[in-house]
Amino acid sequence: MKVGIVGCGGRMGRMLVREVIKNKNTSLIGGVERSGDVLIGKDIGLLVGNDKMDVKIGNDSDNLFKTADVIIDFTTAAASLLHVELAAKHNTSLILGTTGFEESQIQKIKDCATKAIIVHSANFSIGVNLLLGLTEKAASTLKSEYDIEVVEMHHRHKVDAPSGTALAIGEAAAKGRGIDLGKNSIRERNGITGPRKTKTIGFATLRGGAVVGEHTVMFVADGERFELTHKAIDRSIFAVGAVRAAIWTQNIKPGYYSMNNVLGFN
Image (cartoon, rainbow, N blue to C red; front, side, top):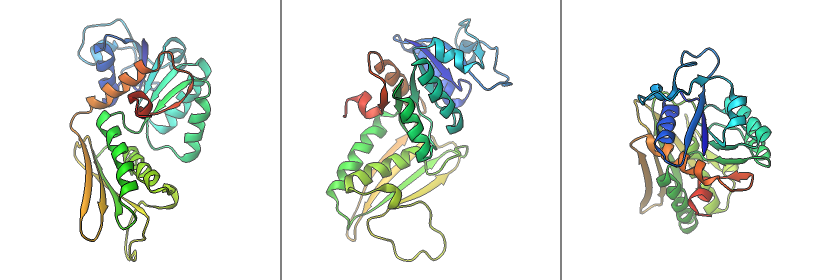
């Protein structure tokens, strides 16, 4: 498969470049960065310490979408909204790992998925996706006497909070409980908040250092606490999952998919 990477010069972008080069089922045909970036014009192989590939980093996203079979995007919400339009325009598959979208923006992504395959996930780790399934099951089993709290920690550079993965965990818990997360979530607590409301799902956000990503969902009753935790040790797990998703898009109809589809959970 001919794979292109947008935002190839970032930390996650470079991980993706390495994984696409390494995988025998994928061929890296290009990568782009924002206009004016110092990496433009440089060889993408040398970017990650590999041999020269004679593939230059560019800034023409439209042309990359036009020539690739699939694009991998772990950039920003603003940039990704432009990329989903390009995917629809060129009927190019898109693996989307960007987080921080508003509900209306998610709808735009789904609208574009009527013309292109879009695999969208807050986290491409296989372990995290297992965590989501277990969270939904636990939430449906442990009734409302168990309060649900989601705690996440990431590196100091992460710009959105709660993390997309934390919100996905919340959505899984809400689905298990049969409630609407948007109407039953507590995103912050400050000052005199009063007693905790039943049937709500709380979120706590921690930031610091170089933490790749840690997520815990707690089910807390008067007599016990049940926890499910996932800790990412190396960011490469996200790249491995994203490339697996890219390969999965072969011979699939346009639509809005998740890692559950890729892993065969649905």
